[in-house]
Image (cartoon, rainbow over all chains, first blue to last red; front, side, top):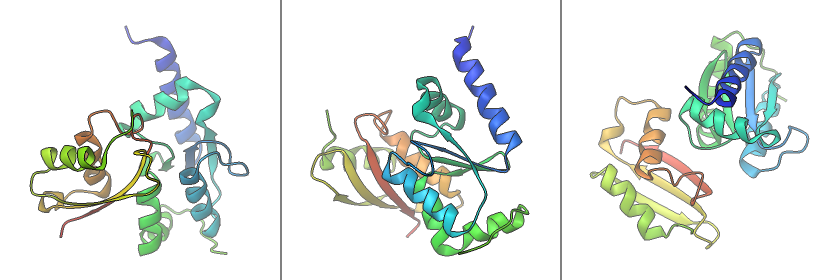
Length: 115
Length: 76
């Protein structure tokens, strides 16, 4: 029987990514990022004027480990768009540089207002 | 216990034998590297799948012994 705190966490994660178009699981908050990689993704999203919801994984160990299990991805931050895992800092930055990220948001009907 | 540059390269090459691996030690603390991994076996795979192949080669060290790996994957 799976440890129930893990079951709750994956339910929380599913709810979070279902009820928000763009979700960033990060260390810290957009205003006070606690890790350079998380801050870099917040910067990319802000540059594109993307409205997003964020989850501070430092608030709970279950979340910090649960999100890695959920996506089978070993690091934080993690970006989700319309319930799809897009990637961590490296991939999001690379997609931003190639314009792929803007295309992704447009194709998913998400408002982009580059500053 | 941090990961040495040599071990990092060895793990990746063991898992992706045809790869060329270029590693830069960002801080000299065995915890922060950037790596470019070039391999034909990435062809047809998404970026996420490519990066997962590299993370899998580190069998659990990514995010534990190894805190930060800035990763670029290429097919050639």
